[in-house]
Image (tube, rainbow, N blue to C red; front, side, top):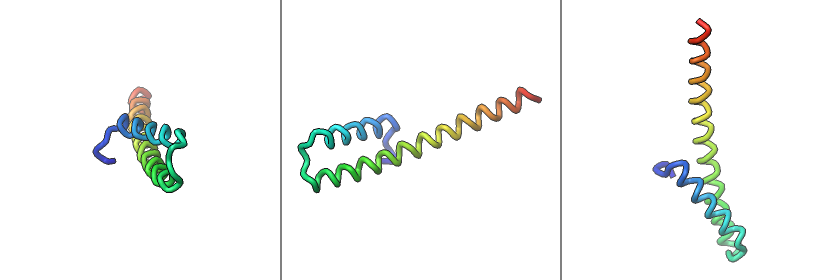
Amino acid sequence: MENMTFEQLLAELNNVVELLESGKLSLEESVEVYQKGMALSIECKKRLDAAKEVIVKKVTSEGETNLK
């Protein structure tokens, strides 16, 4: 997953949701796909949190520069 872009992770997560919603998977397959979806979701959240941190730092540092 580390070599995937955020957009690729999100697309794969969407595929997982579609698979689960289709109702065509066995219970075992559903559990496996659900676990994959949770891993994708966690990775997406990590990347969003990292991006948010960068933005907050940038905005904060620019604000401090403008105040001086």
